[in-house]
Amino acid sequence: MPTFVDQIKIEVHAGHGGNGMVAFRREKYVPNGGPAGGDGGRGGSIILKVDEGLRTLMDFRYHRIFKAKNGQNGMSKQMTGAAADDTVIAVPQGTTVRDLDTGQIIGDLVEQGQELVVAKGGRGGRGNIHFASPKNPAPEIAENGEPGEDHYLELELKMLADVGLIGFPSVGKSTLLSVVTGAKPKIAAYEFTTLVPNLGMVMLPDGRDFAMADMPGLINGASKGVGLGLQFLRHIERTRVLLHLVDLGNQDAKLALEKFHDINKELASYDPELLKRPQIVVATKMDLPEAQEHLDEFKKLLEADDTLPETPQVFAISAVTHAGVQELMQTTANLIEETPAFDANAHDEQEAVTYKAPQEAEPDFTISRDDDGTWVLSGAKLERLFVMTNLDHEDSQLRFARQLRHMGVDDALREAGIQDGDLVRIEDFVFEFVQ
Image (cartoon, rainbow, N blue to C red; front, side, top):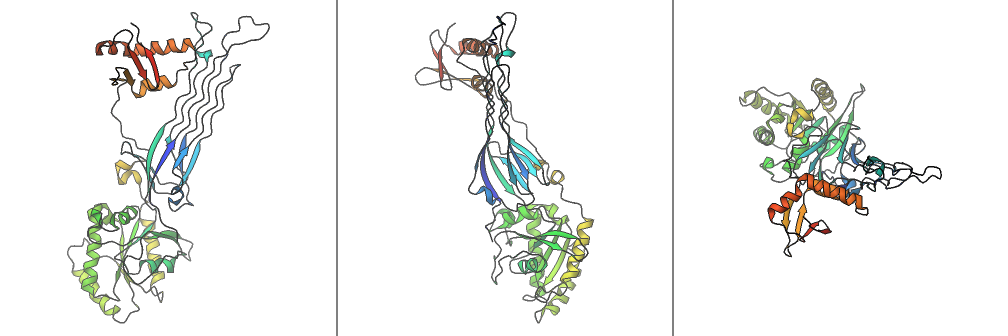
């Protein structure tokens, strides 16, 4: 069985837009042809798309950096460069996407075919045909392409199963799963056998089917992160029906009831909504000698337990002899049909699909000073304008200077004490300040 991977960190780098072009018409019989530089093409975006054929994030273990292609540069004769293809990355259903820089959840992918743009490609730069004016009919101005977005993301898989098998280790969850589905989990006679969730499809004779997951075992304190607890609880969140297995073949009724309550306490500590899911109690290992006696006592204790809102339904099974298994599966299928599907938006407003929390507005620019006295301009908006400026042409340089002035950069530098002849740096570009 492959290792289950349910959390992974990746880098995504969208493509830059192509550069716009400075060009002029040169036809023989058009003496004053005018500008004819085309626009650059759009850079490729990076998109996550749900593929129901995937069950884990294993594919990301050795491939964690994704780069989309850049758009093509603009060409002469007003020809626009080709847009780059988007890079589409397949992810399993139940993948939650978190931006590691902001800590915000930006998407919750739960539907087959659902897509989420996680890094947007830059737009193409405009060619000089866009900058012609009566004052400047032949401009040598063109924009460079806009940079694509870069993000560091964490992908977390919350398995989408209709039915979750819960209970202490070694109560028979893996065995039941292997009997009713085609899954082949590792099974052994010791605690904490299941270190990762196993998933299988139950196919009933009447044509109905549903996905069943055998979850990793819990211990006390799981909701606080002890043992495998949080890994277990992340996956149980999305199940519609819970089968709560208790071992009545190897333990008496009082101990079984105590463990039953321990599991439910951990579920409630993590998320009280989990206890509102329909829950069937499954008494396992009924082929063992004292199991029936333990079961009768267990049912009496359940009926007398006033801490329960209502007495749960109890099914007795033996995964070895298959006794009671088909009846349990039929009842489970009926319960699934009566239970609404998991709603990502209703479950937690912090995990709404393509949710992105508003960020504090960043200043257009900031001013600092190097140790050697050079003034340093930075800021997302200013740096974006700089990157999109083609400094090979004097007209483009003058346009960039005007943009800085309109942003208030000149006035801010004067207030900060800049003098004629001081050096100013934007990224790796250094120029002299002139009043």
